[in-house]
Every structure is written in C-alpha cells, then in structure tokens.
Amino acid sequence: MQIRTRLAMLFLFIGGVIMIIASAAVYFSSASFRRDYFYKRLENKANNTAKLLIEVDEIDVNLLKKIETDNPVNLPEEKIIIFDYKNKVLYSSDEKNKITIDPKLNNRIRLEGEIKFKHDKYEVLGVLYTERYDRFVVIASAIDIDGLSKLRNLRIILIIVCLSSFIIFSVAGWIFAAKALLPISGVVRRVEEIEISSLNLRVDEGNGTDEIAKLARTFNNMLERLEVAFKLQKDFISNASHEIRTPLTSINGQIEVLLMKERSSEEYISAVSSVLEDIKTLTDLANRLLLLAHATSGEMNANHRSVRIDEILWQAKEEMRKFKKEYNINVSLGSSISDAEQMIIHGDEYLLKTALLNIIENSCKYSDNHSVDVNIENNRKQIIISFSDKGIGIPEEDLDEIFEPFHRGSNAKAIEGHGIGLSLVYQVIKNHNGTINISSIINQGTTVEIKLSML
Image (cartoon, rainbow, N blue to C red; front, side, top):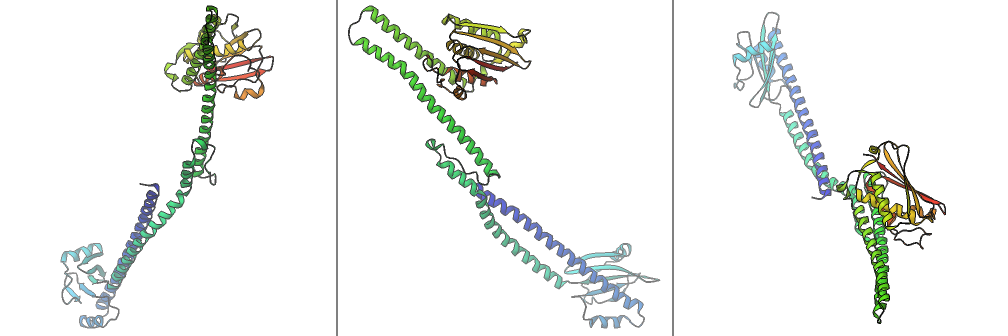
C-alpha cells in the first residue's frame, strides 16, 4: 500500500472517529436532557394534581377529572394515579388500566421518595406527596411524543452528517496526503535522474527547515560522498593502470628487442636482469595495491590482538636494513616510557608493521643522508610515534592531498615511487582508531607523527 493511501486512510479514520465521538456525545447529551426535562414536567404535573385533590377542599375526584380532561397543557397520553397510605386509589385518570402498579412499588416509593422507570411506551414517575398528617403516592406517566420525535430527527441528522463527513474526509485526506508527499515526490524524481555520469546533481532542499529538507540534505551528503568515492575510484583505476602499464611496457619492449636477433650470453643476462627488476617493481606495486584494498575493506578487525608497538618497530627496522643496508634508522624511547605495558595496543601486527615500514622507507628515501629518527612517547592514553628526517620536504600545497592514492609531491617526481605508501599508512592508522599528522619544511625535512590508543 502506498504511503499516500495510508495517509488518506489514517486521515479518514481519525476524522471519522472524532465525528462519531462528537455525534454520540451530542446525541446522548440531548437524550439525557430530554429525559430530565420530561420527568421534571411529570413531577410538576404529579405535585399539582395531588395538591388540587388533597389540599383544595372544593375539588373532589369528579371535578378533578373534569379539570384534567379539559386541561390544554396535559402531556400526551397523560396518566395520573394517586394512592393513600393503604395503597387505595384515591384518583386515577388511567381508565383503561394501561399502567399497572404493584403495591411493592408504592412501598418502595415511600422509602426512596422518587422512582423513575419505563412501562411500554410510557415514561413513569412515582413521587411521594406529603401532607401534614398523611403521605400519598402519586404516579404520573405520559409519552414524550414531541421530545422523542426531535431526538429521532437529531439522530437522522447526525447520521447524515457523519456519512457526509466521511466522504469529505476521504477527499480531503487524499488531497492532503498528495500535498504532504509532494516534496518527497520531487526528491524521488530528482534521485531517479541522478546516474553515475551525473553525480554532480543535487536534490532540492525546499524550505531547508522541515523533515523533507533534512531528508534532502541527507541525500545530498550521500551524493557528495558517492561523487568523491567515484572520483577517487576513477582516479585510482587510472593511476593504477598507468603504474602497472609502465613496467609491462618496459618488459614487452625489452623482450621484443631481445628477440630481434641473436644475442650474446652477457646481453641475455643483462636483459633478463632488467626484466626481473621490472617484474619485482610490478610485484611490489601489486602487493601494495592488495594491502591498500585490505586496509580499506573494513574487515581487518578480525586479526586484531594485543601487540607491542616497540617490537613491531624493531622488526620493521630489521626488515628494512635487509633490503636497504644504506638506510640509517635511529629508534629511541622517550622519557615518558617506563615499562613495556605502556607500549601495548590492540591491532593487526602485519598491517601496522607495513605502515611503519612505508614511513621509514619514505623518510630515508627522500633524505640525502638516508636516515630517520624514530621516537616513541606515551601520554597515558596514547602512544605517540614520531618519524623525523632531513630530506627534501613536502610542498605546502601537496600536504592536503598527500594521503590520496598515487599522489606524489611535486618535488618528488624524479625519485622512484608509486604514491601508494602514505595512502596505505593513512588507512591502516585510521582503521586502528589512530591519527596521523605530517608537518614539513621544504629542503629542511619532514616529521610524521602517529597517535595510537593504548590497550
């Protein structure tokens, strides 16, 4: 069922319930008022008739009957019966005995003073009329033809009004639902227009204050993130293709040249060695891309465990020295470190070591003396690792994009590299709920500071 239909039905239900409750309240209030008013008239009639018969000496039963017969203000089908203290009938205008009175009822009236009840079509009131020396029971009954007729007309009018209101509520609810959902319909139409090639489009936020505007802003924020993600993906694929194509082109060219004519053993060895270097470059690039994909997949928490960051750092230093013996890596513990427990974190040992290796490699590679100073500190909540070098530095305009895949500083183009290392480091540190900050001065050096939460 569509939201518009549900809203219209809800509107009809709420309006219908209100109309039914209001109509019922009007009808039952009117019925109660009619009943009280009619019984009040019966009470007045009973008291007046008893007073004439009992207190006026000149009026006897026959005269009273004649008076009541010719009385123009008599109630419809009016019946008056008066009993003495022995339940003997002193006066009765009920000649056809339509109202049957049990002696027990008279005794009850004497005890309670007043009783109201219905007898067939008649509404009956029994009251106790007291005189100085005696007490009489007066029974007055009549049919409220006029009052019941008005009540019946009121009931018909209320039913017609309720039915009419249901129709009005249905139409009004349908129109109201359409108007209420109009902004959402606009959002839906706009979203349907947005494709991969048009992620720059945005949803109209309307007045900017209501819930629809909040929904539109949420869509726009999502579209903005998607646009950035697609752009990054596009750039990533383009750059990765370029980086992979370069060594493949080199390998292809060298093999084609090698096959053009017979070569000496030395030439074959030289060519194969060059191809091997290109294959190593290609393998290294593929490994880094796989690591970057793993780090950005959000599935690395499964390998987290308690590790010591100093041990990982020492391992990274030893591995780097195996491949780059000319690199000088100086590791020191700050004065804030007093025992090994202060260097334990929760993380993926392999990815953390890879991240530290990348920072160390960059620091040494871009320094003239191929050295880096690594220092570990502790501020009771976090472990702080800083890497300082005296290299070429990073231009200020490149610092904002330095963590983007394949982005390299404008002054580092001549040095071999792929531009994946720092983006990998950023993802690893981010997934470990840490932070990374880089400060640099051209031709003076760069400092990379990493903060990781302690266990």
